Length: 133
Image 1 (cartoon, rainbow, N blue to C red):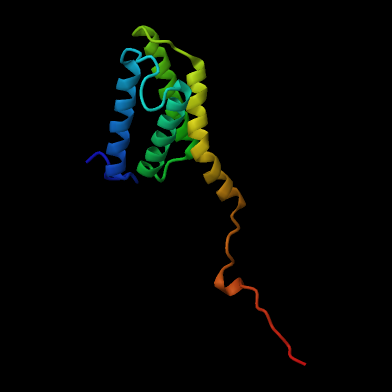
Image 2 (image 1 turned 135 degrees about the vertical axis):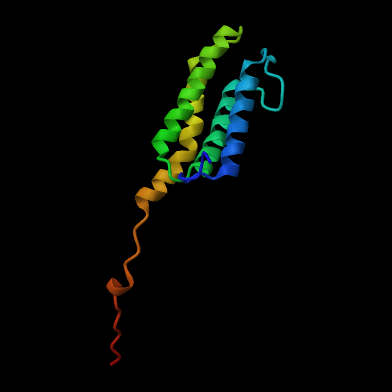
């Protein structure tokens, strides 16, 4: 089995791959002229890559954040290159919006890890003694 020796959440990985394939398919369709629920293209990129990042870190819990972010950013760049071949506008501002979506999810997680203090071991716990007069 492909996932036997790796720490991969298979269900989340399947959902991630399906979501990434759907995002690629939608990105290569003819331009809809800003129609839809979210008319601003950069917001669409931000939201899609925020969700893809959340799915990726759920699917690959043992992977390093920078690797997931780099792969997703490369995916966003690949989408822009492919859009140039199908008659869509390839804009590097879209890759920046992708990076912002990735960073918006990783930023708070990294900040939490940097500011969290490890709790002391039970044998090293501080003992408080109160002396009554």
